[in-house]
Length: 200
Image (cartoon, rainbow, N blue to C red; front, side, top):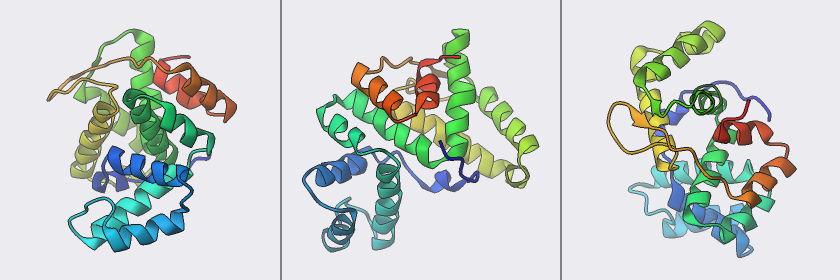
């Protein structure tokens, strides 16, 4: 997996599952991303409140879709909603290195240790470590890090990997569809498979 530069851009983004699903459905119907981009401008595909937001949703979701091999698109159509949400999360991990590291270093570690709670302190420790490793992250304000932590918790919750609650979240280990596991292996994405299943 290619490492991108760390970014705090996720504070402005959402899980956007229904939008992700819409784009994959249109691709599976033979539409190109260029055609979907036009449709979005003409028809407000994602029911966004402003055109700027519509463009931002398309740009983000299309990047997520493009990060996955095409074999994921047909698998997505055949999968249940729980698996579709995990595929969406995988695409988010593929397009955001810091979030990938968070799932790999914090969530995976919790699964390995058999811990069933994600604490706010886990998130703070993760960012403290990253500030020591990265000059860029070291410059971010506490406010940015707090918002980013909230965003990461929301992404995991929306994907069904943690329970819905304020404060500490209950960790829910996903039962991955065998076809999804195989798709990850076939595409050289074992680190993501390990992150989601708690494998050393």
